Amino acid sequence: MNYFSHYYFDHIPGEADHNFGLSFPDLVRNFIRGKRLKPPHPSAPQFEKYPLLSQGTQKHFTRDTQFHGSEFFKTTEEKLNRLLQPVFQSLEIGRYWFASHLLAEMMLDRVLMKKHPQLLDNYYLDLQNANQNAIADYLHLSEITDQDPFFERMERFASSQYLRQYVHDPALIFSLNRIYIFTGAGSEWSKEQYTELQNTIPQAESIIFESLDHLMLEMK
Image (cartoon, rainbow, N blue to C red; front, side):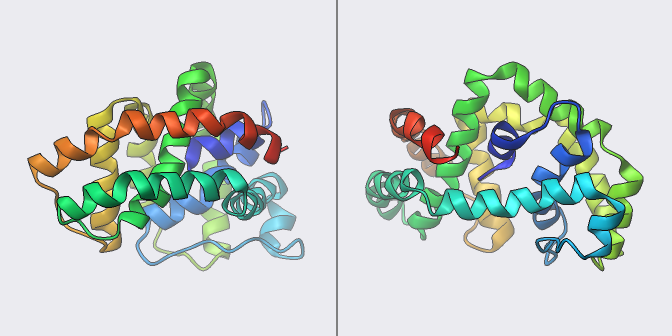
């Protein structure tokens, strides 16, 4: 799942450290190239010193496993593959299945943000209110010592509130292309490629909407 979906399903009102933990693994992976958090073991020093942050981080991994094994995700990915494969092949863009995986998560964020805009406000407040010293020490205990890139990008991510751009088709495709470039899966797309891919967004969003109620039952 993506950032906001984790928050939607598992946030605890008033517990900013826990709620930061729900996004923590993805933030580290996306902000520090080559670094990843591991699921915290209950006996690890992180858990003893920062239980709420650790519990949120642990919940992230549990939910990701549940989500990627869900019928919703499998069915959505199959439908997106059928939608995107001919478009990607005609545009000579590789790895359409990678885009299907990413869009399933990004579009879920988009749909949930549209339905719950106030909750998105709370998400960003919790990012800002989480204990920065605890986050820094947690990273240190996880053997991530060069933390400047993380906190610099974290500040930009939180202050720009970039997830709000997901409701705009061009910004969503731009974000998808950034991920392709960041992971080495592709290069900068052309204007024509951007336009054609944007045309797939309304149908992709409908695919998410059609199965949303089923996902809610699976994620209980």
